[in-house]
Image (cartoon, rainbow, N blue to C red):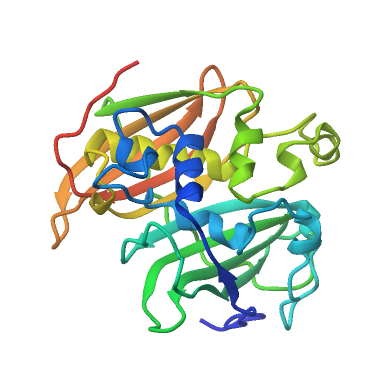
Length: 310
């Protein structure tokens, strides 16, 4: 597919991580004490939670906090207007897990390679920029994960670009009760912990930033909800084995505020692909409020995982 900005490649980003980063990430998304292989570095089967690489485009090689806005002023995309990154929200994220990452990047060189898949003008509401990001071993060229994501630049449309293709939806089965349900009770501190993984957007910490964006105060990272849902799906159907998650995706529908209770409802479709992975559909809703993640879909190799109920 061609169009303004399509195929534009951003400069590659060197990235690194330590075991401590994996422990913090797992703890911050709700991994539990009976999942020590995500939470204790001396557990024989210690491993990264599979969605951990989603944070690396934010983290780079840092161990210290950074100026999020300064870093977000990325290389302008050729052929399209320069967008204000202080007014961008997550649209949708999909990740494919091709190889398990090592417990540490020490002694090896990894990078994130990013390119533009599409730039879509939605008129007055804003512009959608769809990108692909791959986690690559710099020396061997091996690809560990592939992520496709869209950012919605609020109020930055109307520049004459293409509207973009129709989105593909993955709704849950009609009239069927969920096969599994998981609950996450967030707190006022949830986003303040999650941001230590490397996503230091002030929108998730500063009341002023949240007010300027029209949310009345800080909101929780969309990727916190996304990763929490991934944990719920893997725990419910994949026995918390990272090898049992092949793909995971969801669309960001509405903000989550500190203190909200998130409910993940999951349905197994019962059809396996050629490698034995089941398709799972899910939604995440706020108790007493809106759905915050839609279009939830995962490919999971089921292994008799736990089933939780409200």
